[in-house]
Image (cartoon, rainbow, N blue to C red):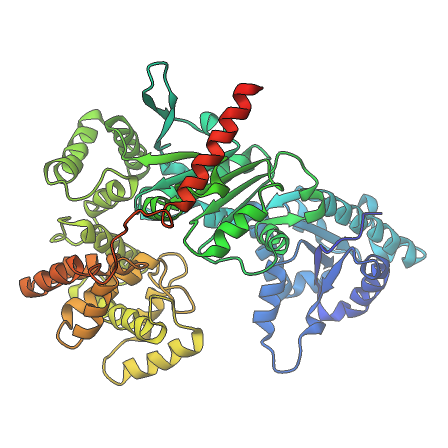
Length: 598
């Protein structure tokens, strides 16, 4: 028998209601597994009065680890049963760790149903339950088969297909959504190494994942949109491909629960299987994205230090220099900085992108040269955006056929403009100015509602979003078809519950709202200028400047931001202010002294 744990594989019963007595018999045969917490099961008889039948069935069949199909003439004749059969079959093409178990109740057309499937049926040797002199013998064979599956699920772990899809997801489009692994170019990572014999520090570079994984404690920092998150997700996918134990945690959601519970919950979100088996593995890797100034993030990192052999953490450069450069808790970490791409890396990215877009034709060198000229005219000639993958891909996207003809990239903000318009069109919004403007107007007011409700840029709750929608309808016309396309699960700029797909879209539309309503929002803009050094306020101001044509507003923002730190007392670097730095130096001196004596 497997070992009892907090993980129980979930079994879903797919059956015709004419065969309910067989489902009851199967439930009884599995009682021991359920009593000993090795299995959890669900059938539609657990749906409560008033609950949605289709919704409950869909949610439970999609989350099941094991689906048993009670095959009979009744099953094959039922459109709903066959719908469940094909739904699970389609899911199994993407998720190798869902177990489809046909159980043959009686002689029927089951061989034709299974003829194209490489899947083993129960009872053994494709014998039907009805052919046994004693049906209990058949159900015992079914029990043994289900028990072997629970043993397998409890002793192994495998990544969930839906989580892998989310890790592969990018916001960039072609004929279809582009996957991270199709576009990823390993970044140029630099570090300041130890001194040479002449006493000079030397800058070293990490140029591939093998060199990166040689370091057991690693902190990667970079500018906004430099590719920190993409790097973390790529490394996670590479470790999964090598069947290495790894967890990925985005620290934007500051862990407030006990650290080990966070790890367990993260594991069950990312993997199917037994957490106890997983945590007993050696050489585990933890990838933490978005280390921030919130104390809970660094506390969580410290708590996990002895639990993982390798930890890779990313953080924005401004956060690193302001909070963590001399943090004693990170002394064991090698620090790498993401540099802009080289010309060779840019060419590789363009080739990868063009090959996907021109999948039926060979991409000629002349075509690549023409595309590079366009990109370089923006990055080099005008120095509008840095040479990071996000900006290069945004520029490429503007030149695709489905983009508006009059759209050109002239600033940092236009990269997001291009991205948002492309996503709306792919979601089904018509390319006309009126439909795009309808979406933009709604998004601007939603971004401002987020701001005034929360005091920052947090998303609204679902209930408040519904209230906002009712208020918006009183002032503007918003066809529900357009809203549904904005909330399209694959391409929409809003999540299904009404939040923005990314925080940068929130900043983009909030800046656009302020630019269009500068007089009425003067106090808001003044406050953001005064607190430009706090949080994401500088990004909001960046997008306000991008969207406005009002020179007076730009001048006012410049003056206010230049004076925003006047209220703060300049550092005098007295003994009290340098105490922490002095403590670090003293510790370094002691360690050097001990090593010399050794």
